[in-house]
Length: 135
Length: 208
Image (cartoon, rainbow over all chains, first blue to last red; front, side, top):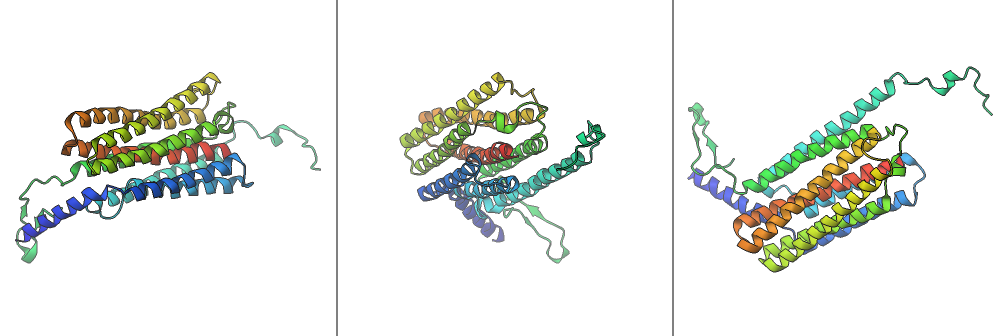
């Protein structure tokens, strides 16, 4: 009895997830318009040199990329908490956490290594015994 | 999952039973999703390499000198439109319109082929200009990451051709629908990775 209701529930979830992967015309067109806007803005920022500050420009480009990745996940891949009884979302969150650790830690560690490295060639100020006075 | 019950009430010895096939109802789709997640790690490590080596020019061309932004804009548009037309093919598949589905799949495949063609053209031009993968650590990481993505797209096109032939010959049976759903996820996933490539490797690379 208990088992029958459990398997019935499972089958219902399974059928629901079959449809969860299908988008609608509306979802694809919404995704397309949003993705196109989120693509045009960073190209415009970089090709027309809109933002003078280099670091701010990089930050904005990467932030727009993260937003667009979520647009793709929601409107094209149709990821939600229901598909495959939530296992798609769980594995996605797990992957996202590990990717952030791998990427973030690699960049952090290698940046520190680079900053603490002995210089391969002495900096210009060492080569010149009498640096020109600052104007 | 819910088909397997464990009886731990009243400290009775645990009883395990599984009355039916233990495989999930949509095992292929979940399994393919897990493959895509593992593919994320492949790309994440290549992105990490590019982040570390991206400014090691070794006196060679910098990202701003070597990379072609107008060509990149065309490539990005091709891949995005291809992703949407593949979505249209999936909608036609749901309505069981095989002819229309094959038409949209062909459009998606041609757009992706144009993408790969332009990318190969760009690579050959860079190598001819002395900016090949052997020139500097930056260019090695660039060619590895972008080339791995291009290889994925190429394999996706081959898979698409095989499934188009299968669907045309055997119709939209359960197996072909399942395969097309997996390819659909693969196709959208590659467009998602490309967002990271054009934003991080190209646009941020030119800036830094």
